[in-house]
Image (cartoon, rainbow, N blue to C red):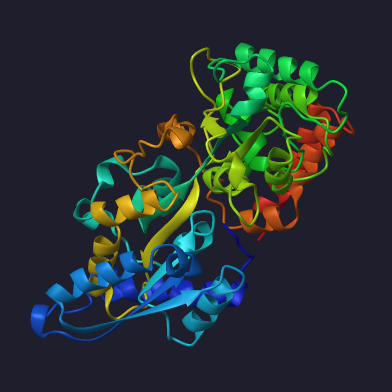
Amino acid sequence: MRRQLRTTAALAALLLAGAAACDSGGSGGSGQKDQGASASGTLTVWLQVDAQSLWPKSVAAATAAFNQKYPKVKVSVQYQAWADHLTKFDASAQANKVPDVIELGNSETAQYVQAGAFVDLTAKKSMFDGSDKWQKGLVDACTNDGKLFCVPYYGGTRAVVYRKDLFQAAGIAQPPKTWKELLADVQKLMDKHKSDKGFSGFFMPGQHPYGALPFVYDNGGQIATQGSDGKWKSDLASPAAVQGLKNWKALIDAGMRGDRTGDDLGAVPALVAGKAAMSFSTNGQLVQVYSADKGDPKLKGKVGSFPMPSPTKEGSYAPPYMGGSVLAVTAKSKEQTWGEEWIKDFTSTEREKEFLAGGFLANTLDLTSDDPERAGYFVGLEQSWNVPAAKNWAQVEKDLTIKQMLADIATGKMSVEDATATYGKKMEDTLNAS
């Protein structure tokens, strides 16, 4: 999900909001009197436009369920664009006109949680369906110092998308289950298409952090860790992370003939054109391969997915990055209890099944799809991870630090050791900047 670096003034306003809520006993909705069926007023909810286009009936159903308890409360759902929703939120905080409920990408939460912008929901966790099996990469984004400040909404991850027909033509009967089998299949595909200099057995460009970093986590490394003094330290140059990135580079060297400086947006066109047999892509990208607008409907039934085999643990899989969205009740809201109840209705098991049917992951490990085409997206989720919960992580992304490092490794411009040392230091300086 998109994120932007917030201004100091805006975060200060949010921090004061959190402090005021705590001083007044507002945390967890205790600052609002719940009058039940006799309560009246307006609950303002900010959702991203995805909900408006993908599951408007789910939004309406959640509101209807909420209104059974609070029939006189109007729910005003206002749809936001990813490009400017945080800028608008900051402005609303400074103007004391915040929404009661807000959706954020799970990579956008850290600076707001640390600024005290959201209500502490720790004591209310059990009221939300599936909370004992929430997706790790989502709940981690909601957690700070052992406390819960938002609720997982839906998730999205990556798996290996493959062309079944190209596999069959190369004599590959089934998807690989081990790293050794994967590399062997890549070689078969490269041999089958050796005369096509534009064909990739595995499309894996350099500027693909969520394709590369799972290999770091697979080998026991991390992106960065925070010490007891609050300072962040890069882990990218650690032996574990370096070897993980070498494993990633080995896959590129084995199967990537395309532009190694590109990003994963080129995966779908390559798969559709038959210029790639595999890619490490989202479920949305898988569907695009046979969609009428971005792909070829004739490829329906000819694509599938499987989890990325682990190079280090035979029979296991590389831990996937978990993207997605979360929902929070703002600390400045005067309707915190209503906000909690609406989120409860919107993330109910019934609604989560609808998000799952819409092509995303539910917020809980207990809900999966029986669609064989999507099978690869439901393996290893208990190991999913999120980016560091650092207030300056947005600046690291804005600076393209990780992408540049990976591009230099993929192209051979820098060794893994030199690239991780150089860019790791740059990332570390950014994370610790005041």
